[in-house]
Length: 160
Image (cartoon, rainbow, N blue to C red):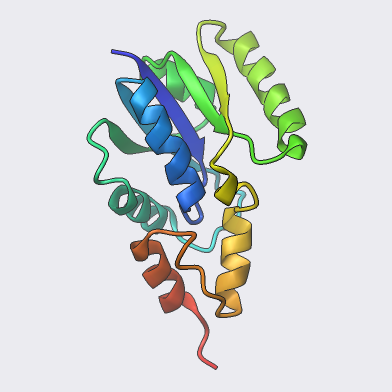
């Protein structure tokens, strides 16, 4: 079974993430969406909330599962029997960091490749950070996130 890992913080998961996951799910038998847990990172949603939002957002993809990943993603990938780590590249500015990570991962586990995928052009400017900021100012983000994420963001808005 050809397995790939798609890691991220997913705070929150966006349609850009889902675009990459959906296309990767056609290339691999199994996609594990690795919810990266980093206690040093401040997130809007808790680990459990991010996990539940990802599970709900991806329920229509039978070969996709969501798991929590503590520690190095490349070691998580090895434990899952993955052949590859899938990473999204929105812009050239993403490439330098992602290439460094890919090279380090290859040094640690040379049997695991990194595959870079570009999102559909309608999502190239999209990030979780931008979504959180737009939601804070009551902008219409319905085209950028699944319904469950939209509802969760609306519920988080401070009363005005």
